[in-house]
Length: 322
Image 1 (spheres, helix red, strand yellow):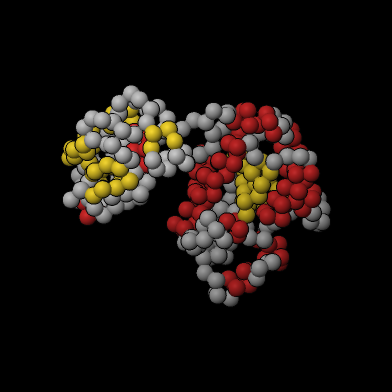
Image 2 (spheres, helix red, strand yellow):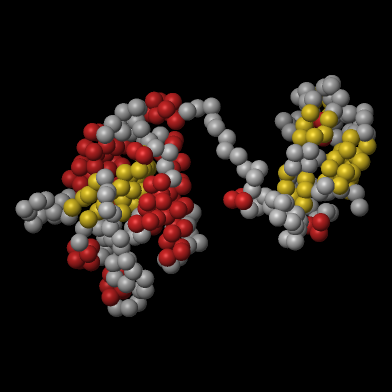
């Protein structure tokens, strides 16, 4: 049953004064004359919203079906895509259509909601290059990945470094593991699978920040070596990923225990805690290794000194200039 609908694309197409055919789900549907901003078709929609008029309410997928119009500008009596009343831009051809997919569809049909398997998802290159963004910022984007046991000082040093870089006029941002779990990763727990997804997500976000030209400080326990290596492999440049291993002995971390987590884990109240009953896999070739103490000294390094060591690395390697 065909339903009369208002659709923004019609504002662009305007009055065709010719019979137009729209292909829906592989079936040609005669639309007829388009004397106004509405037309007849087999789907009821608002923008690209789904409709239940076809295929039992299955999800719509955009497909390249060409609808032609007469070579003239048209006036619409309804608000157009660009707001208000008036002439729509000149359009010779405009491609659009909807196909609908059932769960029992053949393997040749693509479900747009399964993005990873979709063939119509393409990467779009922007007109502003990464180099141009870095030149405007006077720095090179990168990801400093702080990894280490709970209580090793990852976030403390990261925020200390952020403060120092900000004072130098650099564009810098800290992505803290606890903070990210308040939002982006709030639906993840601490199983091995969830920990893997936790790192995958933040790795992709950090990659975007680096591409933007931002010095990105990621502070995550990230206990599994493979997950950290995967995050590294996703970066655009080999130099984008700088692993910072907070090599602080568990005895010191447990003494600090700022959240009382070690105590709870030792008492059996907290299961799967890294360093107690879940493994932490140390980096094999971290670019920066931060030790708890200076050589031949029992004095613990202050966060400011640790941050200074990392700052020296960034300066020496050229990250603080474009």
